[in-house]
Image (cartoon, rainbow, N blue to C red; front, side, top):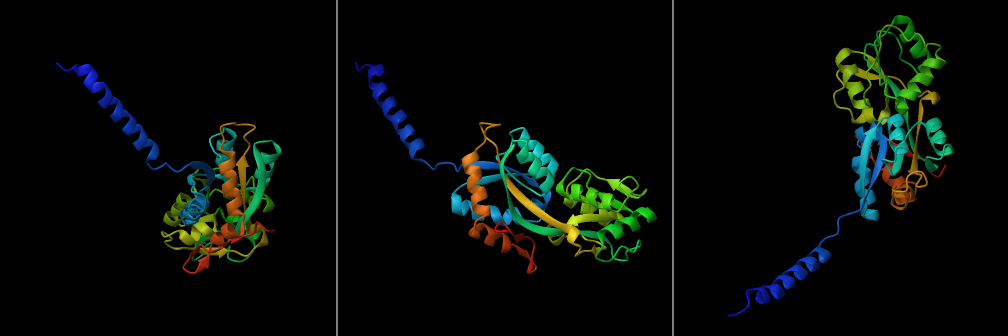
Length: 275
């Protein structure tokens, strides 16, 4: 009688080898990096447009975690991100000076705008953000602050300070501790004023009675930077792949991709890596 054990062993070995060959020759999963970024770059729709272009060029996936800039920097300090794409230059430069980032690269800009009810009950309309905030403070106007340590929140606090109202913003001032989209939604539903980045505003659909009231002030300039997290602090950081993203986004091809993102024919972000 044939020995069942001896008969089966070669067949099992053959099947096992076939399975190994199949797995080895199967499709290789795309490598990925984790990016901590601002809610404005995500909610404006920029990353939905930009990341497929980067993947075509590199084969890399980018997992975006959209937070306020302060939270994104904290995430990177913990080693939970490979690259940062944020917009608070002072905080970014400190991040690099403290050794958490390898190098900061300017990548693009847009601007902040003051949004509020079309009938503008406080009379803020114009080009002077400081004067507008002074009027809001004096009138106790309803104002929604992100209050989330984001780049937009940091800019807002700077403007209140310039207005001499950092400690007296008025009884209508409320912090939501939320992203740009939710803050705009609260302002739309309550008829309040809010500081926003233009990119998120252009992509925002639930505008209700809101309109742009203050724009064009040079103080409202909004610069974005990109940085690789320092692998000397966190050896597991995918620094080489993260640098591939940085190199691409500041290259002529990446900069052209940023310039090409438009809504209703209007450009949302303006590349300036070369400057």
